[in-house]
Amino acid sequence: MTRIAVGGFLHETNTFAPTKATYDDFVHGGGWPSMTHGADVLKVMRKINVGLAGFVEAAEANGWELVPTIFAAASPSAHVSKDAYERIVTEMVDGIAAAGPIDAVYLDLHGAMVTEHYDDGEGETLARVRKAIGNDLPLVASLDLHANVSPKMIEHADALIAYRTYPHVDMAETGRACARHLALMLKSRQRFAKAFRQLPFLIPISWQCTNDQPTKGIYQKLAALESDVVPTLSFAPGFPAADFRDCGPSVFAYGRTQADADAAADRVVALVEGHEDDFDGRIYSPDEGVRLAMELAKSASKPIIIADTQDNPGAGGDSDTTGMLRALVRNKASAATGVIYDPQSAKAAHTAGVGASVTLELGGKSGIPGDAPYRETFVVEQLSDGKFVAPGPYFGGRDMDMGPSACLRVGDVRVVVGSYKAQLADQAMYRYVGIEPTAQKILVNKSSVHFRADFEPIAEKLLICAAPGAMPADTATLPWKHLRAGIRIKPNGPTFTPTSPSRTNG
Image (cartoon, rainbow, N blue to C red; front, side):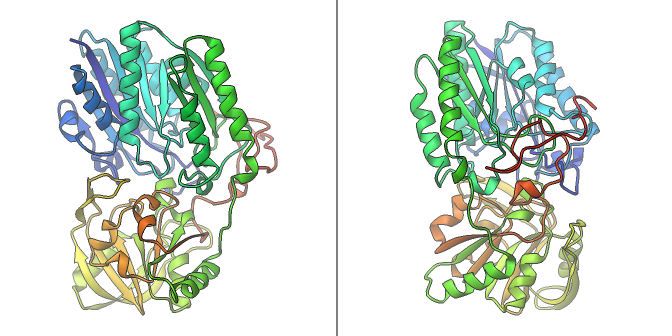
């Protein structure tokens, strides 16, 4: 029987964000499943939208025996602590080394992890796994669409396959794609030639959405380029908030011959570069966005939905800035917003009880310039223990735990307050505290794009606003120091000139 060792370790790192990821953050998981070890991994990875879950499903259909090691993921944030990285990777590598005779390894990775001591977290992980298994066994990994792929990652993996949707509704499907490619390798006993290209400009995440052009069309054409001679081809637009040399978009192809791989990669590169002008759009200030939403709501039959994109916890924000909340209150809007991460305020609401009025210093605790706690008296409308299922297409039925939570009201604005961070990408993240999202005039979600998977069907109009936050919508405003020379820091933007060398390992 074919035996495959498997594991998962995912983190998207915003090196400009205020808060690092500790081991305990991976234990909890945030919007991801909580950390799981050994045989329990196969129990958790069932019928959810996670790469490893898709791989498990396909592997069992193939009759493969799986040897699970560890699954660990945490909400995006600043650097992964050295302690967390070493403990998790050591458990994964030791588990693979102790698996006995195996035929291959599959890993569910993100591709944009930066740790306290390694710029290229996944490159280091793949190198350690390769050292443990030797050069002969196939090593395949799934990656997030936002992966910042490095030469080291390409070197040590036999195949990397990235998601093709943002919102990421195809995470499990990408795991299944990895299983198909691995089956092809095992059957043919062939290693495919690799082609890797890094593109010359950063792409802001707000314009990476695959529901819209140009990205939608790029992925359609990319899929059409796959064939028997190029069985897998990926375009990763990258996560443009990781200050190291390999941050940015990339293309990677695997072909029967080097010429096949090179030709496919070059065609996708030319396609993406031809759309550089199109990776841009309108972003509103908080007051502009709220006033426009209020005007549109007068004749709308469905909610106007605003993305509070710069405080997206899915991109490293702490999900606690108050700029959009202030704009809603200042303009006397009828709206709901969330989730504001503030365990102290959630606890105070629980202590006060439903129906009570409570004066709080809400949010604003992450030290973002231009932001501060919002002092106000709120009515506590509903309380929750924070446990619920998120059935929408992004979370895909995951069990969520937002900790003690509350619906607070000021004027006609309702605020979801939670004790853990996860981007508001599912309608259930309003309903769990008694807010029916479809009944609201305006919704303000702390998310950039993932919310669209569940909210676009109920939206009259989508707007993007830029209140103070850790993930600037304009990548040129970030204080870059370590990018590779010559990359443009936004589409058609200025080129980067390094002022200090990038780290390689600590």
